[in-house]
Amino acid sequence: MKKLWIVVVLVGGLILALFLVPIFIPLSGINCQHQDINIKTGQARYSRCVWFMKISERMEETPLSRALNGEKVDVAEVKDWHRVNTFSPGVHHSPHYRFHGALAQVRKFEMLQEMYKLDPTNSAGIAKQLLVEWQTTGSDYAAGRFLNDKMIELELPVGGDKKPTPQP
Image 1: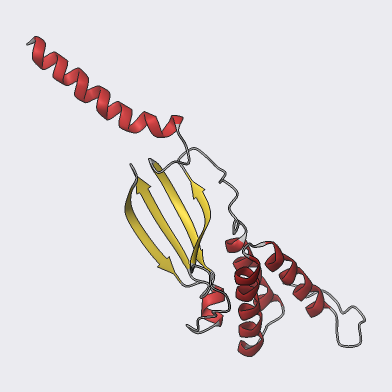
Image 2 (image 1 turned 45 degrees about the vertical axis):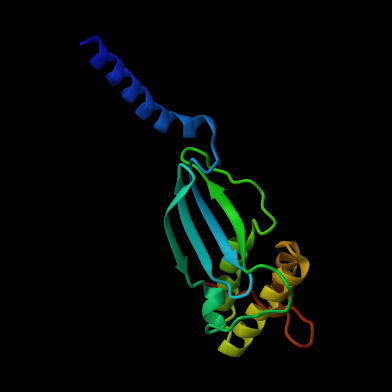
């Protein structure tokens, strides 16, 4: 009976540790979700890890990759996939990675498409330049400035006078 009690306590303690350790060591591979961006195609990848083992992974097309119709933009010798965010249960922030703002920039690109009703040629041109900025600078900083400048450019007509802001 005493041996059974010891086994139950040890197994119970191990199971409890499996759930408590991630609380005390957040943002580790013990229990987290990673978000990545492919800086050559614009695709997003979402993966889930539990105890350092990847248990799920899915890749998604983004407005950026759809604007390129599957075209790959390759202007620099850099790896394709880069980490954007890492989240753990109960932790509502992520370490700051070099491409930390990339998925937000993809959403901003989508807003530009919708607000200014960009045709496919203009959308593809902006998408390509965004990928070029990511690849040649190695971070999301210059790409953010590019998108801001593009929004200002789209606001101003050729003559330079400000036109009315589009309404939803």
